[in-house]
Image 1 (cartoon, rainbow, N blue to C red):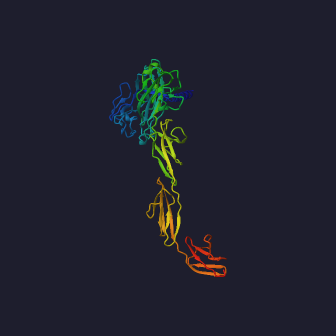
Image 2: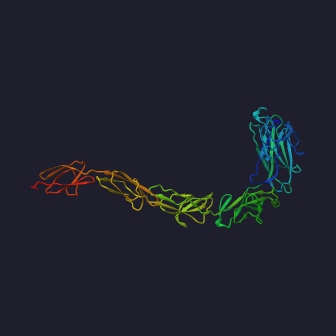
Length: 543
C-alpha cells in the first residue's frame, strides 16, 4: 500500500508539472505598450543591489556564490560561465554594456525574485514575459556533463498574495556550449478593481555546479484579441488610390475574433508616428473621406475607462490608404530613324521611380500596343504614343508622349560590268536619281565618264543618310582582226585573230562559229562581246 501511495503521489506531481508548464504561452493577439519593463540598467560595474524585498538572495559586487546574486553586463565575467552580452545589449548608452540579473542558485530550491507590479488596468488580459539563460558553459567541463539544470517557475499573485492568478515553469534548462537566450511568458487577466499583482520567480533546481542563471527584460504588456483593419475592395493592409480619383470614400472595417468584450477608438496619422483620435468613431466600421495619404488604426480596450490609458489598451494592425500622385508624361528618348536594310531599334521613353509606360497607336484612346514597358519594338513607320502608369495602381499621366519611327528606304542598286573598246569613253551611271553621290574616283555626280579599265564604285546616300554602294567592273576589249576568208561554192568560212567571237550575216542575228552558207552577196558582221567588226565579202561572179 505504501508503494502504491508513493507511486500515486509521484504521478500527481508529474501531472501537476505538465499542467504548470502547459500554462506558459504568449499573447496571440494584439499587444499594447509595456506597462512594466525591467532591463536591470547598464554599465561595466557590478550592481546596484535590487530594492529591499525584491529577493531573499544576498547581493555581491563580484562573482556570486550559491545563494547570491549580482547585476552585471556578463562580458568576461567568469571562465566557466558564458562570455556574452545581456539580452538587450543595446539598452546601454554605448550599445554594448547592458546588464542582467545573475543568480547563483541556493543549495535548496526556492524563490529568488519578487516584484510588486502596479498601474495595471482592471478587467484586462496581460502578458508577462522574461528572457532566461542557463549561463553555465558546458564546454568548460567544470561540471559533470551539462551541470545541474535550472528550472524557473513564474507565479502571478494578487496584491495580497492570497490568490494565484497564473503560474508556469520553464522546465529543465541544461548548460550549453554556446549561450542561448530564450523568452518565456504567460498571460493572465486582472479582476474588477485589481490594478496590482506580485510577480514571483523560483528556481526549482538545487544549488551546485551548473545551476546558475541570468534573467533580463522582464515585461508586462496588455494583451487583447488580434485585430486588423480591412476594406472590402482589396486584401491586405493597404489600399492604393490615384490622385485623379480624389476625394474618395473608403469603407474600413475592424476584424476581431471577440467583439462584445471590447470598446474601440479609431485613430488616424499622416506619418504613423503621431496619432490622433477621430471623434465619435467608436464602432466596428468607419468610412473616411480620403484627400491625401493617411494611416488608420484602432485602439481596443476591455473597459471604456482604459481607452485613455496607453498601457491598458491594445492596438490593431495599421491600415494605409496611399494616394499615388498622377505621374508626369514620359520623356521621349528621341525619334528613331532607321534604314530599311538595318535592324530597327526600339522606341524608348524614361519615367520616374515606380512608373512604367503603356504604348498606344493614338494620342487619345486608340489600341494598346505594349503594356508596362519603357520601350516598344515597332516595325512600321509612324508615330507611337507612350502613357505613364504607376506600377502599383492604375494611375496614368494626363497626356501621352509621341515618339516617331521613320524607316527610310535604302537605295536599291546592283553591280555592273562595262566593256571598253580602245579609245572609247563610256558613262557610268549610279542609276538612282536625286541622291548624294561619292565615287571612288572622287566625283560627286550621278554619272561619270570612264575611258580606262578598272574597278569603280559609288556610294549613294538618300536624304535620310541611308547609303548603298554600287560597284562597276570596267574591262578593255580588242577590235577583231580578220585573218582569212575561205569561199567554197556557197559556203563561207571566216577566221579572226581574236578568239571567242560571235558572227552575224545580217547585223541582227548572231551565232557561234565563223561558217555560213549563203545564196547572195551580203555584208557579214562579226561581233565580239561588245565590239563589232564589219567586213564586206565579194563573192565570185558566178554568184
